[in-house]
Image (cartoon, rainbow over all chains, first blue to last red; front, side):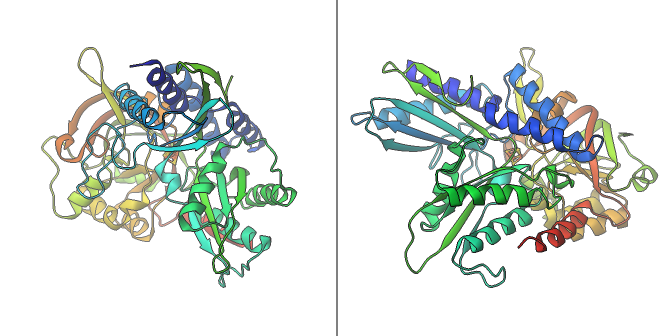
Length: 294
Length: 191
Ligand code: SF4
């Protein structure tokens, strides 16, 4: 293994075993909100114990180590093919070490070759930027929460959702209602308004790179994000759908242009086991600094 | 907190109510998509595996071999149960399960089967792979490893004080139905 592969292996290890600081804080806050002695509070306590145990043992927070999605920001001239090769090697090594479950299955034969490498796995998004810095962010996106994601095409008559922000609000809250506890809530929503069916979902996932305590630069969207969280938390769905105060830990909304004919709202649901870490890399491939955790 | 040990009697199961917190000790088996489909299509359990009076866990664990060559469970949270809805009623009926552990709840057919045959659905905390793996003290056996792969195989676990919440009881109640109805009514006030 070379330095880049080592760094990516360590990025995978920490992502799978350590919750980022901002998410951990949101979980602690929600634990305080739940009424002591309720099944919701006890579920949050188990979640909190689980976070500590995973970190101490350096073992996966959740056994579903999810889709492995790398987001790379790199300067002109960065060797992307070399990076992708290193990512595949690091994924194989992390799987052998048990940081990742053997989690990638041939869709037709159902065979699992146990490496986590295959068509579409891992996923690598490279993006060139005008800076010499190389940053790599990793999201491990679980399957249970992925299954409760939803895409709406507006207008939606049943929900009385028109092609405006109020319509967006209605369908986003409907997605929360439909998800109930099935995505291992309390959850975090990544939302994209606009785009097409593919780019909408893709951009909704990119919202998971934002920190939970950040502020949307667009004041209207910021207001909508806060409103979604506050309203969702009045619904009484609660952790695991057991009932309770905390249904969402956050909502992040991004916008893409759309065609006049289309108006998609794409919603990705992230479980409480929100695994996201990032690093910047030196030219040698060594880790320079961690982006989400100290 | 109510302690249950496997095998569980019908009376013990029928005494449980939605919202009860339980801990489970004894032998439990994992089974998820491939196992349910296989049993539904008439497949038989391998010698050494019996679900009678038992508890089935919807789980695809991460298991390694330790230095002595023993299986060791390093992560074992529940997987989404609703995928087994087409099959679960039949597995409860034909194999005599008293408990099914999973996450996310199950539908009407499973609620009916629980009521009719004396079984409960136990919701574990989704994602709590480490806390739950800690309750798995030994992994004596694995079945169907070759056929189905590690996450889908039937793993035999010896568990102590494995925590879960009764969300479907044997009287036809479902916490999932209750919370859905209440949250739907609540949302109507805000949109
Ligand atoms: S939804 Fe998340 S926490 Fe739940 S099982 Fe899947 S990855 Fe784990």
